[in-house]
Length: 85
View (tube, rainbow, N blue to C red):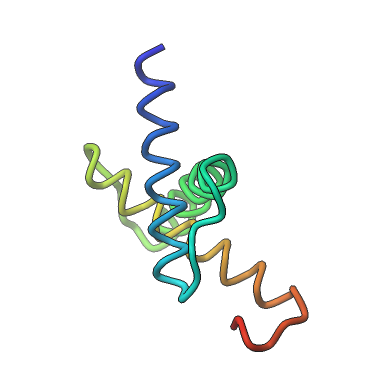
């Protein structure tokens, strides 16, 4: 149970941070968690393709932020609003 809570905390922080990095804002706690958790998978996959692995909490957080930023960039690319890209 503790690991699941920690995973959600990392997801929330990563989603919020990616929203800030992508010149936007957070989307609220639940959407930030979803974006961060999805970003963890995307970031882990993307970094493994180029030979990087994450270790520890800091590595997981950085990987999640990178993946969430990729996800937000991709969403904004196809959202039809060029001002947000």
